[in-house]
Length: 262
Ligand code: NDP
Image 1 (cartoon, helix red, strand yellow):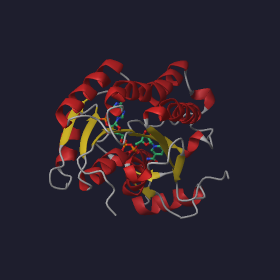
Image 2 (image 1 turned 60 degrees about the horizontal axis):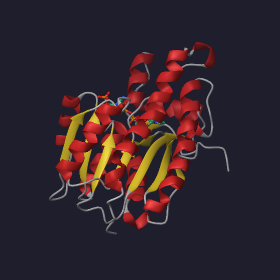
Image 3 (image 1 turned 135 degrees about the vertical axis):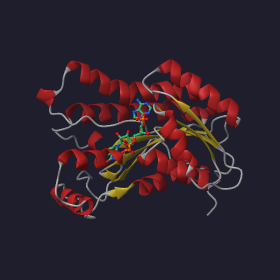
Image 4 (image 1 turned 90 degrees about the vertical axis):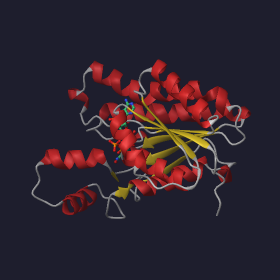
């Protein structure tokens, strides 16, 4: 099926690794142009250069910290002028803060809210003039199942994720009249840099495969494994596609069945 993304320009934040990189790859394979940012531009440019792409698909890369509103505006201005507009935004940049309530400082609470909530306000505000000119504008916010099923070891991250889910609902209602669709993809445990770093820090004698199989068992993931970044990217690309023209204000879980709510 043609997803109708050929020649569309999509911004992906945090695209140098994991879910962001896989999403950029899936978009380029569909023939979309990708504007990608991360804080480390060298790593970003090297990662994007490796991706196969359909004929004509172009990339624009820039160093940008999504918590800095002015930097985000400059990045989106550059993206729109290089790629001829903006049709989609994937708010993906981020990380989690592994800390229980009693171990989380006020400063860390502020940082989490800044990264998970303000960064999305920054990109959406800056992209709005171009999204309003697109005939298939869409925003996808990468979120976590934690937003609906908080974990005590991720106190600030869980709360900030809930705030983002709430904000996504408001954004979808606010901009529906402009034809801008806003949806979320809520992740379970996905095999990316975040988990590789935790595995290395754990000093475990188990292989990566054994360690993640144990993790999946401990967390009760029905599919018995971590997800792949590419498995998230398919959901994101589907939501960006004009084929999803009647889907807005919703959240799709990509978690191998880990969510326990109905
Ligand atoms: P990775 O660590 O693999 O990639 C994170 C990306 O975000 C990198 O490109 C990083 O590049 C970039 N980034 C981080 N902070 C910023 C910032 N302030 N400004 C701009 N870019 C930034 O992570 P994942 O692919 O695992 O995670 C992607 C998203 O999914 C994150 O929001 C994460 O919280 C969320 N998520 C992931 C889960 C998982 O199991 N993997 C579970 C639930 C949610 P650089 O460091 O150069 O800036």
